[in-house]
Amino acid sequence: MFGAPSLEQKNLLRSDLAQGLLPGLRSKDIADLTFDDAEILLSISAENRWTEDREYGQIVQKEQVDTMPATAEQIGRIRELIKAKHLHPLSGNTLLKISQLSAKRLIWRGEMNRRK
Amino acid sequence: MNLTYREKEAFYRGKAAGIIPADCPMPQTGEEIDALIVHIGPMCSRTIGCRNQAGKLFFVEISVFSEKYLEETIEHLPDRIDEVSEVTELRFEKYNSPLEDLANYFALGPAIVNEADIAAWFSHLTADDIRKGFELQYEPKKLADCATEEQRMAISDRIAQGRTKPLSCRQWENLTGPKAAELLCNSGRTEDVISAQVRLLTEEYAKLTPEEKDMFRKITTPNKGHKHD
Image (cartoon, rainbow over all chains, first blue to last red; front, top):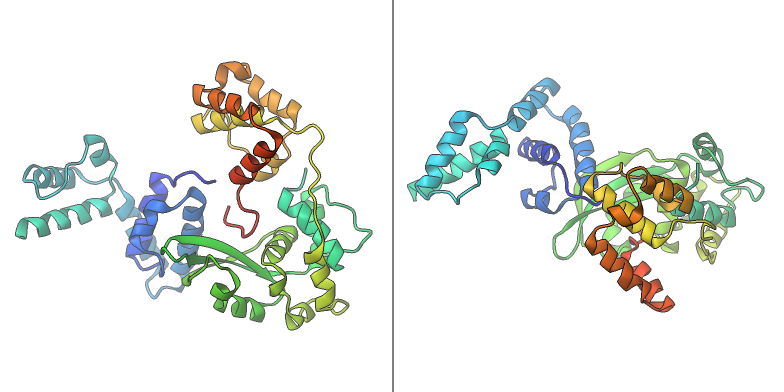
């Protein structure tokens, strides 16, 4: 399928990339992928779980946490950072859809901007 | 069950190369396709993440007859495929049907032919025999009662809207007029479901000359070369 990847696929890919399961993939690649490309990459990361030094269960657990919806605290913190203009504005719809991993990154970026 | 365009082409090229016996009939079922492994052999396939000159990631699927030659081919991929300027570490071992593997092999062009690779599976064939498969002038036969462009556009539109289940490549390429009509009938007449944009496109398409229509098909048909579809 030439269509865009699903949100679920994108979140999983971000988590797997952060966990080092997709060597060779760059975070900016994710924006241009097709549904099929994402499926291939997820198959690669699924295989790479077995060759990692960490336990398989640890990797899967981290993946689950990363892809869970952002917590109320995280969304609140992001809103504060947006209000203080340390982050670009995001719609309420987008905020409700972001994962915990994306929220962590946004907060980190906002904090870095605040310090500057 | 009908074969895809790629599978049909691979079947005829395989026959021309002597890989598939001349008296072997076109497979009609999944089991018959799988049974071709007796002739084609267990080919080695890998999906490789590559980057073009602009750094865009894309995937190519490589199939050859031996593991050793597969590694060698991957190493020299930028020399074999113009579009590839960098090979990434993103690799995935594929287990395809024998005809899909053979289609990947022929898509790489005659430069892929290697004596040692062929000898890994075939004792009765030479590089020159295999080259005959590449040299075959293959003209795909058009389905006698294939779905019209208008029907296909209407179905595409419905799939995009989520009103019809997506079709597999095998179903799409072998879609007949009656089957397309049946799909369209399930939720109203073609005229009712076709969007304004598709209707406009269909009207404009009807005005084209045969040469222009041919050019349009070439532009809108995915590249048959390397499989990243």
